[in-house]
Length: 312
Image (cartoon, rainbow, N blue to C red; front, side):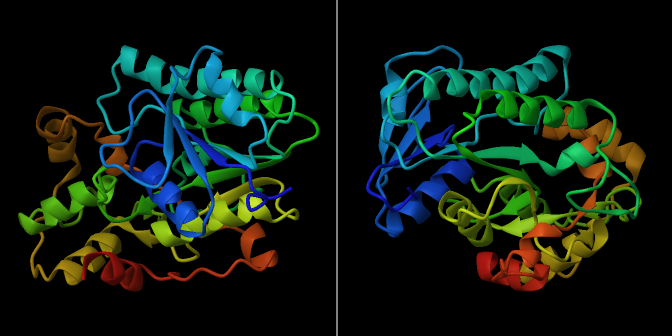
């Protein structure tokens, strides 16, 4: 069975930017979509919303009975100040939602044959100037620990009969559809204010993927019986932070971008942006080895073309 066999695709945690983008894409292909989330998406769309708390088994599990596929996107945003409470919720939201989905697929007669699990390219840490692929060692620190715990819970929860696909996702650049445009919306605002220059050294990696390619990758993971295991979900041409912001300024038509030294970012990010300065000061270069070997071709392999498409 594939995601085109009549049953719905269930997107857990699908009310945010990435979930709404995927739901819109799948519905455009004629596939029924069910979104599981605490609150419905901000804008109405071609899907059915079913509430859940992402922690306890409930009547929502019936949506998985006969579903063609399950996509799990649940996870509290990491775009925040990393207080102890926020760190706890970042970890718990991912692990507990994945755990209860594992309980749910065991509680229905006809569980979805395919489970596509979100993960993060942060699992590789922040190695300077090293290009990571699927076989690279995991990093150390909070973000890699969360990624490992997320994938371990998925491995424990998926049924032996299910085809499981893990997508270690980089920075998804996309349009605003009433669910927020992801981090690109915030960067675009900074660029328009003339603040989109080099951050810190500027050499930190910016691995990215256009939302259209992300959706095509989800679609392929749902349908292609060859896809199994972990993949890096990132365009084949990661760039430095300096080059990413230069491309973003070109796409918007802003000729200048004031730089931000590391000390200023560490001071201003939590006070002004209410976020973690490490999100801007650290990064990684990741490229999938498996996707090109299995014939996946990116529509937007280069950052200039991707940003022109999204921002023109």
